[in-house]
Image 1 (cartoon, rainbow, N blue to C red):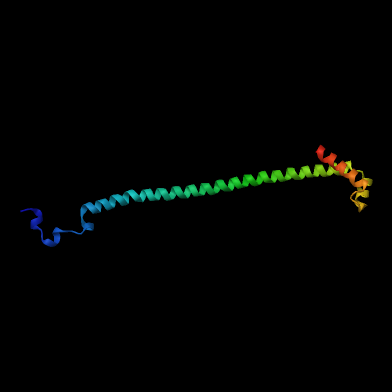
Image 2 (image 1 turned 180 degrees about the horizontal axis):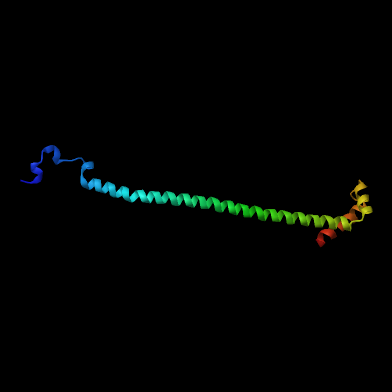
Length: 121
């Protein structure tokens, strides 16, 4: 007589969750997946924080570069404006501003002088 024949019929067929092989498989899967999921969560959190920090640093660098470019542009505009004002005669400027006729000689002379100033800068 074998062992299974000596057991009552209700004990001969156990549900799969009560069988040793399924219990071992379940524990093996849980013990394998749990550390992997924990490591993945920690890694993803760390990568996200590093990415956000890097983007913020890059945006800060870009803003500093743009600020420098704007300051240079304003400085150059000041130099050009100073050169224009310094090289124009006040009488010519006044006559050109008072003249209603754009074909007046003062306008032509003023345009020539402005062209010379902008070419030199």
